[in-house]
Length: 302
Image 1 (cartoon, rainbow, N blue to C red):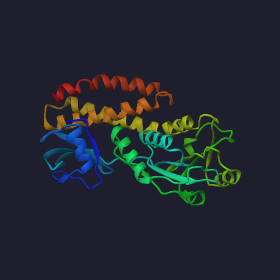
Image 2: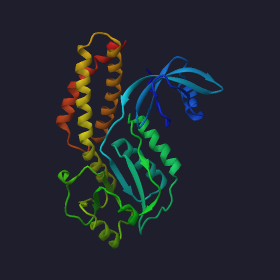
Image 3: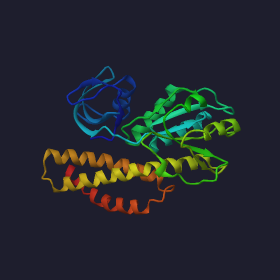
């Protein structure tokens, strides 16, 4: 199977026949030059499927779904609330936050916000591309611009990046089953009135950040919250690997191998994102041992 992964917003199921849109068809047929009968993967929030190209007519790709590769993921909801910033930095932030596991973006207009409008359609494209590249199934949602007052009506566990806070660590024991949301202010920081409103929020955790390292600190917070998801994924891969290597060369063996290889790319990507931020030496050593055994998997596939 090729390394091509495409987000497909419609419902997917085995034996479904459908067509890619014009942009995706061009990418598959002209850029990647995939031919009839070759396979690629399609995903949405309900899972990931293998699809086979049936034909290419008038530059539109028709496909048939042949099997499901991954099930729907039930991940901890992790939100990012922020003030819009200049375009280039904005795209980079959205891309990296998607790769780190954010499930929802909530842009807020603060008193000192400079950029007061967003191109939601363009940002959604950035999110989808980041999800495709980072092997995610769940594609984050981005909400419309809102006020701080409206935002604070959400049921959530709030992590407040506050220059005036003394605490430097998140108390994970305080987190509930509600979504966890990290809120960061505009370039000129929160106004004092905004700061006081946020501090009134039930269960809020103010976290001290360095004045010159807002983005890095936010990445650290997101990475720590996402570490459990990373460990859970490695455990699932290890279990699948054990089951696969004791199987005979059946169709199920080939299916399991494909899933392992897809999941392996995801863990490699996550570790690469967080290795310089989160202290995960033991996890990395554990993963390296499993990775050596996974090197055997391509030999089964060929």
